[in-house]
Structures are given as C-alpha cells and as structure tokens.
Image (cartoon, rainbow, N blue to C red; front, side, top):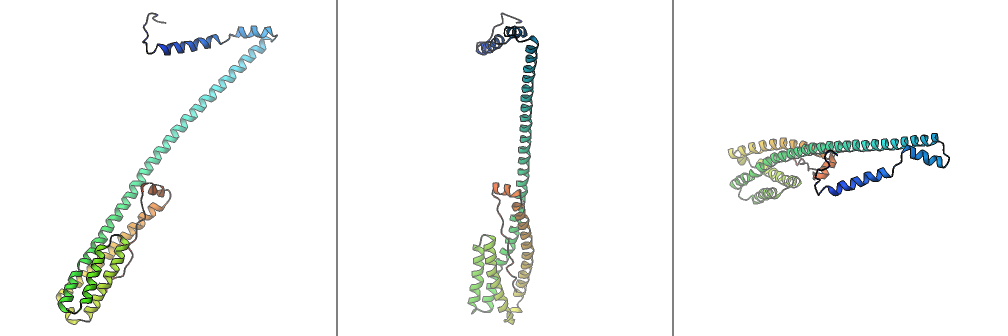
Amino acid sequence: MNNPQQRIPEEIAPEVLELASRYYADHTQSYSTSDLIAAGQEVDIPVEFIQQAIQDVQAKHQQQQAAQRQLAHLRQRLLIIGAGVVAAFAVWTGWTYNSMQSSSNRVDAAWAQVENQLQRRADLIPNLVNITQAYATQEQELVALLERSRQTYLQADTPAEKAEATTQVNQAIDSFSKYATANPQLQSSQLFTNLQYELTGTENRLAVERMRYNQAVQTHNQKIQSFPNLLVANMFGFEKQEFFPVTGDFK
C-alpha cells in the first residue's frame, strides 16, 4: 500500500473486508504448476501429461470467457438495435398521427364549408315563406312544408342527418318552384327573381363544397384504413368519416 496509515471511512470498511476475503480465498484455493506436478507424481502421472492438462483446461476456460464476452457483446448490440427500432417506431407513429390529424382537420374544415352553404340555403326559406304568404295566403300547406323542412335541418347534427334534412329542404323548395311556375304574378316579381338567383348561387356553391368535403373524407378514410396506418388509427381513436351523399338539386 502507498500509505499503511491511511484512514478508511467506516461506511466502506465492510465492503473492503469482504472483497479482501474473496481475494484471499481465491489465493488459498489455487495451485501452482509445481503443486500439480508433485500431486501427479504421487499417482504416477508423468509431468508432460500434467502440463498438457493445464494447457487444455486453461484454453477451455479462455474459450468460455471469450464466448461469454461475445454473448455479452451480442446482447448489447441487440439492445442497441431494439432501442433503434423503438425510436424509429415512435418517430413513425408521431408522423403518422400528425398526418391523420391533419386529414381529420381538413375533413372538419371542408364540412364547415358545406354547412355554411346548407345554412345559407335554409336561411332563405323564410323569404320563400314571406313571398308565398304575400301572393297566396291560402297556400298554408306550402308554408308549413317550408317551415317544417327548415326546422328539420336546424335540428340535424351528423352529415347523414344533414343529408336527410337537406332532402326535405329540396322537396320543399321544389314544391315552391312548382307553385311559382303556376303563378305568373309571382314569377314577375323582382323579389322572387332575386331570391331565385340566391337559391341558384347557393346550390352551385353547395355542390362545389360537397365535392371538396367528399374528397377530403375519401383521402382520410383511405389513410386510416390502410396498413400499417390502421394500427395508429386504432391506437388514437381515429374513425371513418361519413360521406355527404348527393341529395338532388332543387328545380
């Protein structure tokens, strides 16, 4: 030792003594080559066989230690590869989630545009009611049909419900158009002409927005239903979106 008088902290003293005892046990339980040769001579084993046996056993232990080192190295490499795979999967999962979230947001944005046009058309119904009442007070059935179709639309929530409600709105507007066709005085009204322009323009914009929405839905649904994207979709709860069906244009 460099300094026999060096003070050893009490907390490490037990560990030092335990390790020293192990070293001493290994030393006392080992044999020198001369010890093994002497022991072999007592049972008439030639020296060269003792030396050959020592070399063979040492070589065997060296091979075992080398194999253990290779196994430890292989385990380390597998851990590194496994960590790399997990990291790559995490990155891919994050990228796929963001992509699905973006497509879902595009569907929501497209649906909002569809709803804007549907709402705009529904908001024109009171004007149809006013014109009908102004030119034919006896047409209460047509008035009720228009008001009922608008109320049905306002109570609809999902795309499927909106589509069904839009069918009723279309039927009501179609009934109004048929009534207007049979009423020349109403057709000559500037108010009716302006309203027809608004209805036609709204229907054209609705057709465009409906097409854009359905395209966004198709892209989103294909993305979440394809493998392996569906694994992430199921993990984070992405669901298939509903198409907005063609409900028929008013005349």
